[in-house]
Length: 473
Image (cartoon, rainbow, N blue to C red; front, top):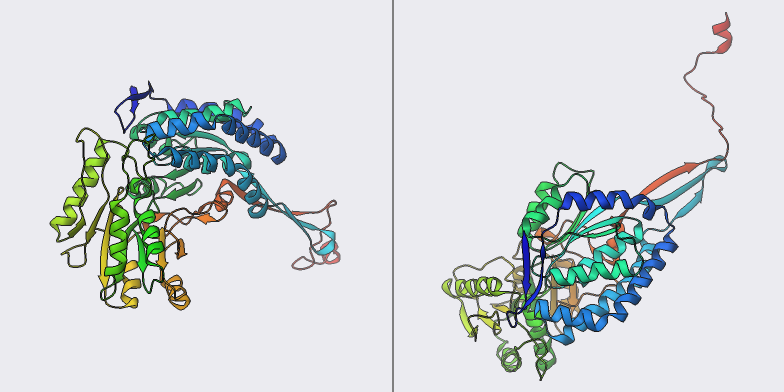
């Protein structure tokens, strides 16, 4: 089946190709895996450092392609390429810290050794919002551990996925060890369900994550890591610097056109003390430039990924209004043929119902509450549990929030998005399956093997045996 991708900002065709065969790609990876796994960790790390150098040399090419295929501003695409490069050294450090070889002395001169083995062939399903950085965040640690990879990029960003794999091959990593299979949801489903993979590393929607989890329910022998987004709360309470707080709120809600899994979806504020802060938020929101990726002056936001996504976000925005939401900043779509959306802010305090879903676009819901305890309660009023943040000058309020908020990322006076790669990243609830990625990805890319070792056989059985003299009689 023929596939194409288009620039969301212009409609220009970016890439064309054919859907691949997951079974065939898995077979190639399976054949190549033993040689890769037999190499030392040092050899694999050196190969991946060469990969980082290849990406560095092709930085402009990759950043330009990311901007064209996703629509994200060029400045933001360049930061994504930087994250791809930086992932290698971070993963080498993580592997050494999280999965080191250990030996300990035991009784009678024995030794106890703990070492780690790769799983085998790992499937990787990548998202479109960070088409290089997020799949790379799975691929690099999995390769370091000695696994082979079959990677399916998002069908909306196939060109970036193909370029990423080309960089691995250019660095000398065997072509059989990193495979790229293009295709839509049917190809992703076939990859996930194929018995030839030893595990699956997934980043995407909660709906797709639940489907994959069900598919793995009778496969406990296969590793599964899911990162599935969030309906993330941002609490602003007893804020000291209103302008700084407004900047954090706008960045949390509207960075990447709201297409980050860590974007703030709900802003929770005190009923009797929010007007001044919201005034600053409105002023800053009204200044946001929404434009094509390479425009001058540089835009803060580009389009969402395509017209279908824009239609979905608009439908959800209208659904918020239908449920009693009050538009404080209305969403507009200047050109119906392009997925450019202006940021929206909707007061949902008095709505008849609040949607507990991840609206993957520039929509921020305001919720006013009468006490700090109710603010925390409202923050937890979700099935998700990825990111949460509080803006406050009161350390005790942060301590209370941290202790009670249900999320895998909890920040203080910082945005909900922009999680560091040097720390674990993952959520609870339907945001994941307790397999945090980033620095902790090493944990699920290899499994521990415990060995009790002795140079000579020494053993006796001291109880439960008949006296040999009695047997002679």
